[in-house]
Image (cartoon, rainbow over all chains, first blue to last red; front, side, top):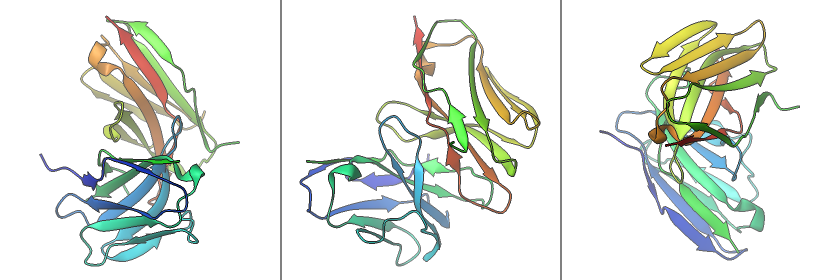
Amino acid sequence: EAEVAQSPRYKITEKSQAVAFWCDPISGHATLYWYRQILGQGPELLVQFQDESVVDDSQLPKDRFSAERLKGVDSTLKIQPAELGDSAMYLCASSLARLTGELFFGEGSRLTVL
Amino acid sequence: QKEVEQDPGPLSVPEGAIVSLNCTYSNSAFQYFMWYRQYSRKGPELLMYTYSSGNKEDGRFTAQVDKSSKYISLFIRDSQPSDSATYLCAMKDFGNEKLTFGTGTRLTIIP
C-alpha cells in the first residue's frame, strides 16, 4: 500500500540550530501539505503545495521556516533557527483529489528543541 | 472561541460498549466533515468522510452531521481495544482546501 514517507522520525536539537524534514508523498498526488501538531492539539496547516507552487503559506512563520518542493514531488521543510516553542510533530500529507479533504498523512517527524 | 471545539477527554469505556464522540463548530460555511484516527506516535488516518448533513455508516462506525446545530458525531459500535486512539474531527468549506481540526479526543477501550 502506498504511503507518505517522512524522515527523520525523531530529531532532537538545541535552540538556534537548523533542522530539516523531508517528505515523499504518494506517487501521483499533486497536493502536498505540511502540518504542525503540538502535543494535545490538532494539526495546524503550515504550507500547502500544488505541484511545485505554494498555494497557502499564510500560517508559516516565514522569519524562520521555509519549505520547498522544487520538482513537484518530494518536499523539504526547514527551520532556522529552531526555538523551544517549535517542539512538535511535523506531519506531511498528500492528496489526490483537490477540495475533498481526503488527506493521507505520513508518520510524522517529532522535533524536540532543548 | 475556536472554530472547532472537541472534548479532549480522555474517555475510557469497556470493550463492547458504544462510543460517542462529537465536535461543534462555528463556521456555517463548512461543508465537508471528516474523522481521522491517530494512534500514538503515528500520523492521522482518514476514518470517515461526509459531505453536508446526514449519516454515513461504515462497518462499526457511523458519522452524523447536523448542520443546523453545527454538530457532528462519530459512533463506534462493539468497541474493540484496537479502537484505542485519538480521534480528530476535521472540516472544510467548499473551495477552500484548508482543513480545520479539532483538538482530538483520546479514547481507551478497556478489555
